[in-house]
Image 1 (spheres, rainbow, N blue to C red):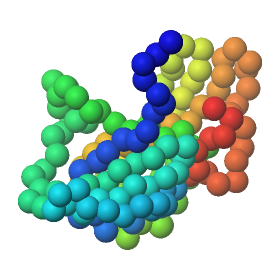
Image 2: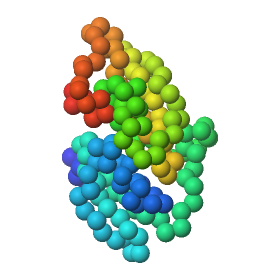
Image 3: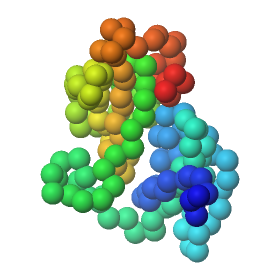
Image 4: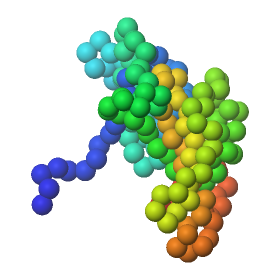
Length: 157
C-alpha cells in the first residue's frame, strides 16, 4: 500500500500569466480556478487528463536551457501525445498569437517495438514541450489510428 494518493498537478512559473494561459488553452487546457499565492497571480488549468498550475513570477529571469544544454539536470519537458505531429505544428502556428519556436522539427525515433514521430516546441517562457505520435507499432505491423482533431491527446493510450 502506498502512502501517496494520486497525482494532483504540475506547476509552471511564468513571466506573463495571461500569455501563458492563452498558450496552454490552445493546447487543450481550460482555466478552472484563479487565485493568488502570496503576491503572485496563479491559476489551475485542466485538460488532457491532468491539471496544470501557472504562477506568475513578479521579476522573471530566463528559464534554463533544458533542451539545448546536455548537462542540464532537472525538468526536461512536458510530452503531449498527438495524432499527427506535422499537422499539430501547423494548427498551433495558425491558432497561437505568436508562432512557437520549434526546437526539433518532426523526427522519427524507434523506442522498443514502436516507431514514433516527435517534435519539440517551447512555450512562451522557453519551456520545452514534446509532441509525439505513434507512427507504426512493429508488433502489430499497423499504423496509428486516425483522429480528426490532430492536436488533441490520443484517447487510445
